[in-house]
Length: 380
Image (tube, rainbow, N blue to C red; front, side, top):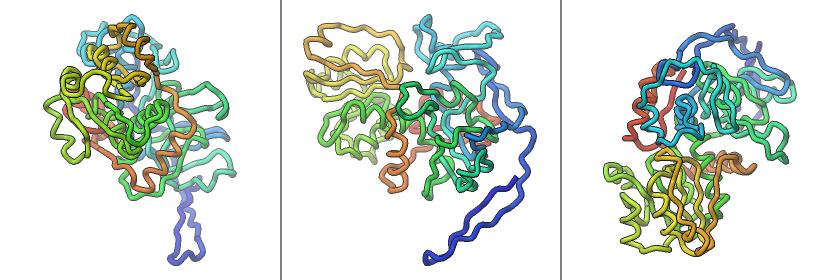
């Protein structure tokens, strides 16, 4: 098998192709999530290197990001029977379980599963000559995929519906890899796909634009910190909700107001102050967030790590003609937009820490302490 690397001469002269033999191993290192449960369900082991079809490419994983969904899937948080927040459930004592399926973003998720939704990788093998130009390219993988075509409403998610990037190699449809021309590190690029894609999708769907007054909760998390940057890029007037211990994280950001609780926002701004509330957190602050919205305002949610079951006063909803949106599946333009923002340096990656893949348990434990800003990255 050949992996082609391209060298460009200066001054726009002729491109030369140099081919080198690479030997793909029959087996690779990976982290298997073996079922619903605690950290004992994460097994760093050897598995077969994926074999690709004509519609796929094989990537050597350069870096992979950690997300809340990795933990939520493993602990069974997506079940409607669960009312606890992510942190409380992750600390619970799980009974030894051999459960072979759980719930993910699209419903049933089968175990064992290689998780890892964020992937920066190098294309090392292609299934079709039509995409041989991808060989040797550094790429990002769009994790929210439309395998039945762009016109389909059906989405599948890498690392929920099929194996992801917590491994040395991963196979993906060739239409879902995007070459990136950037001097960012592998870890920095791996911080982008899921968090920034989710945040950009929320801003797009809520019609956030210039001078929009937007409140972003959970601003130190992956989605929250991405949303801050992306909303500022759109020219919005951004206020955030974070903890008192994390206020110092945002000194370098041009943020209109930093609050440590929803009640502080109500006392400072008054009710009906924001056009949009972008909320990846949920939990007990939900009723106050609706009060903060103007008439005709939009509440949009992409998560509920602080608690999935909330109190809703329907009078706040219908008397103000509010729009309440859920946002998981992405619009088609979202990922190409992000690639453009990266290549134009219109956004900055925020990497909190990197870990070897084998240290995934340590990384997830530290991730759940929520004392960081940005993303944790695993390197095979």
